Image (cartoon, rainbow, N blue to C red; front, side, top):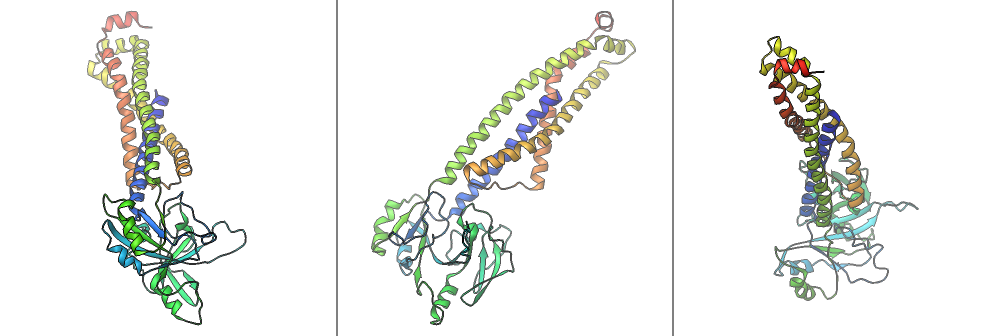
Length: 378
């Protein structure tokens, strides 16, 4: 009985935590993606060092081509477009041979940004202006550190949460600061004042790229438009299937355990007929017998629930690692209060299963005739 309850509790606990984590990261990710499409300069061979559209679009890819930044003001007026924000690829900060993920330096507009600042922790109260910067989670930088570029010391004022994208290896600073450096003739830059590498566009509700395509062509003579794949939606669908399957298994197993517990306690009551009959003959009431046998069932179920929490943590680690690697997401951890609450609920669910399963055999135990129980008991 204890092992059966432990298995059910472990499935309920791990599945619930996993489902909540997936739901939160997909919902949060959908709101943080911000841009519905990214406008880049017209694609030419060698114009981009990498152009990967299999991941969500968060930032501009490394490029030596530029757009006229002034076009964003015309684009903002297009019906069907809610917001436009510019980004400017500046440079790679570490070009060590063999480095798999060099840190990128990207300038953005904090006033109109829709893709970067939403990844700041919700508790952060960070203002990005002047010689300040935001660091990706994989840059090993912390608030208060400095990043130097072309004579400018950029102070890190915030660290972004993990995105599982190139943003994690990127440092962002105000585009106005980049233009100030470009004004200095003694400091050559690969861009000119007013140039941008990409325009992030958020569409109005219900609008599609087809609705704004003609307006974009009127504002820009040539461009490349990239639409982010539906990664968040697909992740939610796929992982929801996993969670649904586990919930179904937990439900079926829970029903089976109730039947199993009922059978086990029926056997237990039958084996204890003489003992229960002697208790009744010595003056024990039906209520005393009921409480004694029922308390035993609840205690065993409670122990199974506690064991199930430990087993559930193991299942959660394995399942969480699988989901993160298979779907390229980072599950948001639950708070200690939420984990404790789910733990208590899971254990109570296990105790409830044990109580329901043992209820009928315990009732039968109270109805035993003392004489017949002693005579026919083993």
